[in-house]
Image 1 (cartoon, rainbow, N blue to C red):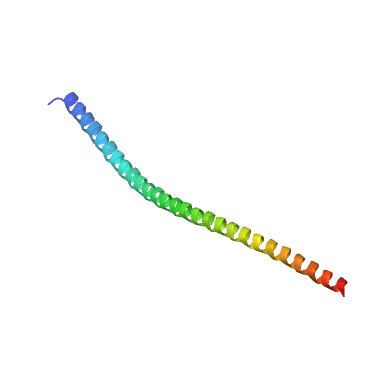
Image 2: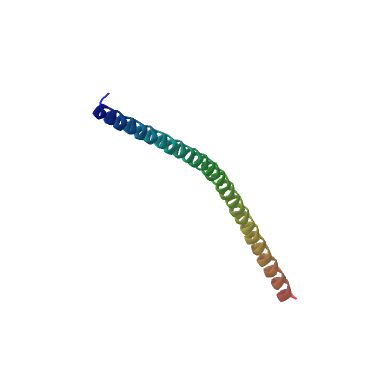
Amino acid sequence: MSTGVEVKISRLESIVEQIGEAVLSTTETIESLADRLETLSVQVEEQGKQVQQQGYQIFALCDAVQTLAESQDNSLQKLTQLTETLDKLMSMLQGSEEEE
């Protein structure tokens, strides 16, 4: 073989070796990115579960606040009735004191 052909073959071998190294490096990078994407996917899924759980907690809290508000409204109505009854009783007592 002539020296010119050997040089070309050597260059081709070098190019093929560089292409192989680039393919290996790209493959490693893709695998690393895939691992990171998997980790992010798991984290997003966990955050989604947490958001859903917080939604349930907020719903339960709203329900509890509504129940508390209704209970307070009932208590206020009873207190108003009690105040009115005490006012009537006081009026009756004052009326009987004036008669004496």
